[in-house]
Length: 480
Length: 59
Image (cartoon, rainbow over all chains, first blue to last red; front, side, top):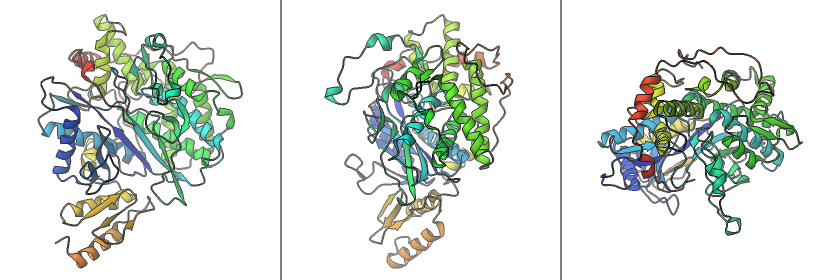
């Protein structure tokens, strides 16, 4: 598919910085969410979406995205975007909507929104889910397709991991899987390059909590199921570096393109994907050795070079965006052997590793000092005044893809070229109406009108939605 | 699509693939003019805040 839809869903952590603060984390997240909808930036759901998603739990935004509480976490789902610049811009707009609300509420000194995926004290994890629209011909039944995708995902962490202090064993989900965690193994890990690697016990699975998989096989296209499939990945980390997010999404989309074209190679399949995920992430020497299913010994870096070279051979000139992704993919791959310092501002784990090691040198600390865990968290703080990632931007060390003015605009404007554009218009109209509504990703319904379906995510549906709203207004005058 | 050039990046791009015999990445000579400000920012971080960050498991 030359055209593709991208989306990112981010579950945020919330840190109460002031021990005297009067609200719990969940109460604070609820107020932040309500404040955003109170600023006329979206409409709250009037209906149950699930047992744990009652009316008012969340809603759609005028930028076409969605904000809600999920299992106690504030979560922002970007609108559907048809290019990487829009995706990065809308992703950051979500971060800023939330940070703006914290500032508006006067909580900037008390509450920090943390865009990471682990709680280093209890080892709870929460996700950053990636969505890619692929054609229905991308066969899930063909397990080799999934194994090749898995090999790519396991090894891409060398440039898109967010990094973390320490390690943990995944929480056992099934009683019969219960085993005493080997603490000596995790205690030996000072730093690893991925936040999620420790929490992925399966190669393929449909569930999204506890028994997570490298490739999530849930079939929920949220579009015409005869044409499309939505690949929903929960294996990746939340990124602060825009460059890393763009490379993660862009390179993964190219890998899917290779699979769709039949140009991915079975010799890339790993002998043990889950084990490699963890061993790559935890390797203190960044050698990232792996074994392939055919018995070949290689490294994550070399396997990524093989995939990149196959992508260059097949996809150069495919689209402007493909050419750009191939370029930045090669740049990063070329720089990785120079060491983490050479990747500062482009790759999160490397930026964090460099900052932590400099801080340790300066203050004569070692990796076991608990201050480093707090530094790790602070890297992901959305507050520009305090967050460590923002220090990289301030120092001119972080590569940017989005423009601040575009991010500001994207807080209240949907992207062009997808159905999010029409949805944004709908949400804006509903904010001024008394109509009863039910909105979902694939359509909406007003009052007792027939549902309006938006099965093609590449269409804006804008003029049809305007007509529909006019017709509904004429019949029931809900927009008077 | 254009990336904003990073003026602090000093290393030169090489077109070679990695050497399999290398023992991991080597340390380049990279000086960072903004490092002191970053370290000051890090110094302000509450050393105990990680203990207060207790989250629910999500998806």
